[in-house]
Length: 128
Image (tube, rainbow, N blue to C red; front, side, top):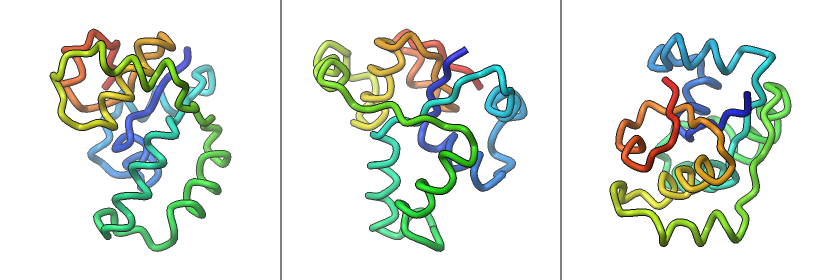
């Protein structure tokens, strides 16, 4: 199954944070699943790292450049259809990164691995 990881899911997985649910961790670790990280999440991490909100010990480009391939995660690019689909979505969620992830999840028919229950209002398949 193809899976799209939410930004917090990616970070919690990389940190082995106990906040990550056992179910989410298991589906990420399952080699039968193909895991994707949106470029939007990389962008969000870089912005938050600039503001010292993540406590990273190295630049996000180095961290992600190493950890994405190490964990078998592929990048999901932001396509025009993803970006423009946002205007069709109701504003259930104010966070522009989460709205873009919802659009990508819907258009790519990929479940979104996320703790964020607000995303359910978009009709995405959310796994947690």
